[in-house]
Image (cartoon, rainbow, N blue to C red; front, side, top):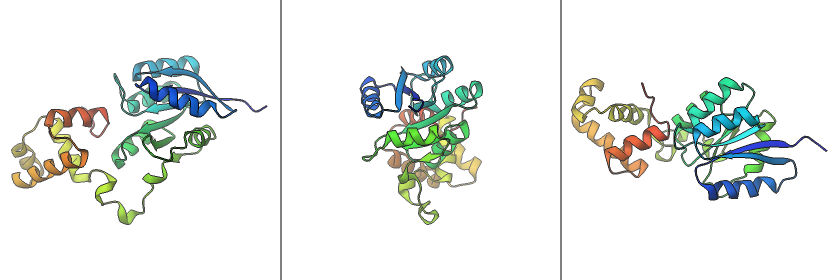
Length: 209
């Protein structure tokens, strides 16, 4: 009998955790050993339970999934963490992998194969959602998330700067900045600056000083 792959489930929605638990425990070699609903609990339980794999939601109350991943890997360098996210922005994926996640999959994918992803990271592989691996020629297209310039402007918006201040800093016209701001909100489906700031911080799209 092979050793079980022990799993810690981290998601702030109990129903989501229940669904994932059922999906994983249908496989004979996977055993869910704990559940956490926020980033701080995730760090605490990961250190306490030392699961083989932590399935980590990216957007969590308290500290984000990316920060929780960073803290867990600092204490447990061999921890395998699989990041689940609703978002496919390149920046977010890069930040998750830089924080130490071994995989990144989209939780709203119709063909979400959580079992294979968990087995993959447990075996030491890097697992990326097939939808995220696009040919380079497509990288600039709208469906790949925000552009580098938009992320740069988003960083300034989160810092509380006006369009005029951003324009001066980046040597752009105020009108260009306004267009970028509108495009960012449109791409993310957000219509208020306050909501944009919260979204950007919660999803790790910006770096906080």
